[in-house]
Amino acid sequence: MNTDAIVKELEERRDRISHAISLLQDNARGNGRRGRRKKRNLSPAARKRISDAMKKRWAAKKKAA
Image 1 (spheres, rainbow, N blue to C red):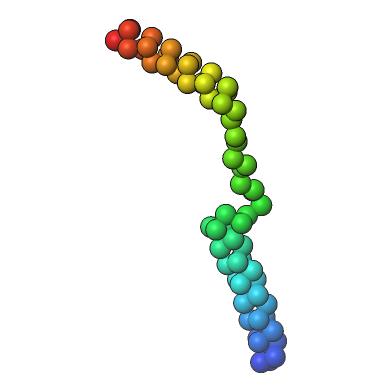
Image 2: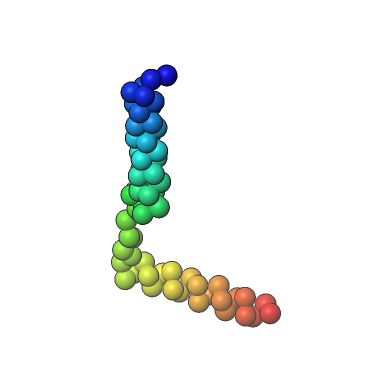
């Protein structure tokens, strides 16, 4: 192999490695293909229903113990 061919092959490998590194860094930062979930906003009525249900559940568990 001549020097030009070796340099060309090394540059191609460098480009592939750089691309792989950038993909891994994006995934580590959370910039991958999967998007973040939107924060769900519950209405006050929904929060009250959940609260009442949990209080009922905790009371039943405490009574059973």
